[in-house]
Amino acid sequence: MAEDVERFIQDHELSDPALIGHSMGAKVAMTVALRSITPISSLIPIDNAPIDAALKSDFGKYVRGMQAIDAADLDPKHYKSEADHILRKYEESLPIRQFLLTNLLPLPSPKLRTPSSPSPSPSKLASKSKFRIPLPTLSRSLPQMADFPFKDPSTHTFKKPTLFIRGTASHYISDEALPVIGEFFPRFELVDVVGAGHWVVSERPEEFRRGVVEFLRREA
Image (cartoon, helix red, strand yellow):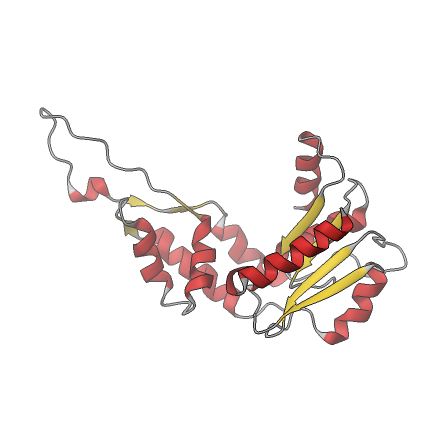
């Protein structure tokens, strides 16, 4: 995935972009920074650290919920609300469900019926939903998703401005991880979003936005 990001930056001729990523995306962004193949100006990892760590069981639950949606026949006119109803069995928090459902692609609407065409049957109106992420691959990869490819800060460092954002109710950036973060990213700053769990962006969007904007303005 880090190589995909590097290729995207190169293909679009982006010059020294700021790179931001959440959760696994944070580890991808950190990997791009430490590989030092594609220049970036600054880095913002959200609620993840440059260490190997076990994923919470919630992630397997989320994948099972999305697979249940994938297996369902949803009404194209109400597919989002029906998908949310299914996902509610797996996650109580509305902001988290809404975040997960951003990966659900719109279903095609049924074609308009002409006077001479027969009415479509109910089965024709329904269609399988489709997530833009490959759920089987995601499910198989969960045990390895929390790994980090760099182990030795003496061989790879990123010495440009770096902002780590963590939710105070999340365990993914522990106080014990801060020394390691400092070795990989010696210019790092830390913003704590009070009361937020792992889904910082969805749970505390204004506090998250404020921290990012202040950092980018200061480092521009």
